[in-house]
Amino acid sequence: MFDERINLQHEIEKILSKKKFTEEAKNKLLQSILFVYDNYNPSKYIRKTREEYIKEYLRVLENMNGYAVIKLEELNLDYYEPINDFRESITKVTNRSGNLEFVNGEYVPVQNGSYVCLTKGMAYCSDRTMYSLDEGNILEELMTIHHEMTHLSEGERPFRLGVQVPLSFELRKMFIEGRAVTREANIKTSSDYYQIERISDQNSSFKIESEQSYPLYGKLYQTLELIFGVDVLEEFASNNNREFDMFKELKKRFPELPVNEIFAHLIYVISCKENTEKKLLIKAIKNIDSFRALILSREVVEINREEQTIANLEQSILGKQSEIERLTALFNNPEKLQSQFQKECEAIKNEIEEWYKAKEITEEEYRKMTKEFEIEATLENYSNVKKQELEQTVEDKKREEELLKNSRETLSKLNTEYQMLLQDDFGKVLEQICIQTPSLESSFSFLEKTALEKIRGEYSRLSDEDKKGEKGSILLAQIQKLFDLKEYTRIVDEKQKSSLVS
Image (cartoon, rainbow, N blue to C red):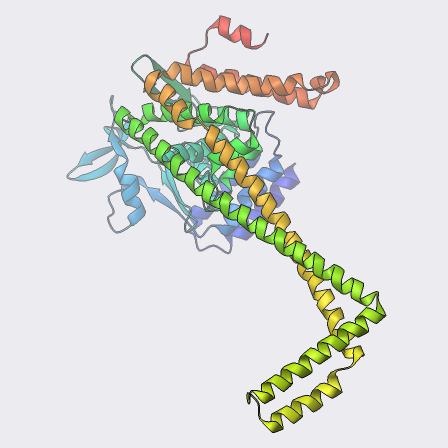
């Protein structure tokens, strides 16, 4: 254990030796990764080992182009663009619980101040750089570094959503920050500090508490991990494909899950957090219906085009098969081959004669062509030409058969997508959940119930032996995690809690 940690430290230092960071920045990166190594203790259902987890962050460190520590007294600097992002998040606090005071037009570090900077760190994935705020709390800063490095581990287009999903930008932020917050929860530390977030609608209000940042995002993301699986969401976090659509992909992978309802409830929760006006959601739902009609019409065009391609290929393959049979029969009958050879020779001679008579070629050209033909026109050469024709026709037929196979597969996918789109009721589900019967309590309960049903379904399919083994313990750990997440919202009573374990 001790030797492993020493080796890890040497590996980190070797990577850092190639970076043009300040010594303070290098030291904090070193301390953060070692801190994660020392305290990595995720929930039992997280299968990633400490070694695998640390290797991921070593790769992030190797690819990192920049890291700087921002001091409180530097928040007034104007020439450094990232500082503006920190400064914009400075907000006034009550009970003089902040660490900044506004004096003569500048923020000054103090104890018991009236202001605090809410942003503790930032990561810019486009150029793989990051920043953290030094407020004198080393534990918090080490966790901030871990949080921002998690962002740098993402792909170019993490959790990409299509335009048909309302609040897609806000949803992606929930997934991205929720993942980083969930990674924070993998590091077990003792702290009396709790983040508190409140969210309300017209019927109810909830208080969500967490030791990590973004309490609501963390709750939602970890619930979704239980529904869709940790590995699936990690795959989506690493996405680089600009054509990828997480919403469509989830519906393909999990036809047994109510993905439309899950996203509708997520959208409602996020709309409450963002105080989104109802009229904007109504407009978004109308746009979904219009978008769906447009996609359906495009699908019909694509299906018709593919069907025509298939018909053309089938006709061409039949023609090539007839030609193969004709040439094969010719080679199997020497007398027929000889007869066909003579017929074609006569036809060519007659054609040359016609050209000459019509004065399309000169007498010299006529004699030259006639002589060349007499030399080349042998049964052996004729046979070789016909063999090449046969071989080429066979190859062309194979190629077209492969194209036909691919076209049929494409058509099958298009028809499946068309039927799914035809039966898709996302717009109606959104209208029901977000407009007709909106309820935060119902949305939280639905997500938790869906997670529970998914876990209990997997548990029921295990053998008695597996239930007693690792697979069973993992699913039970997921149920315990769900209880923990429900406690954050303070909406669980003892009767409801006892019914979950029955």
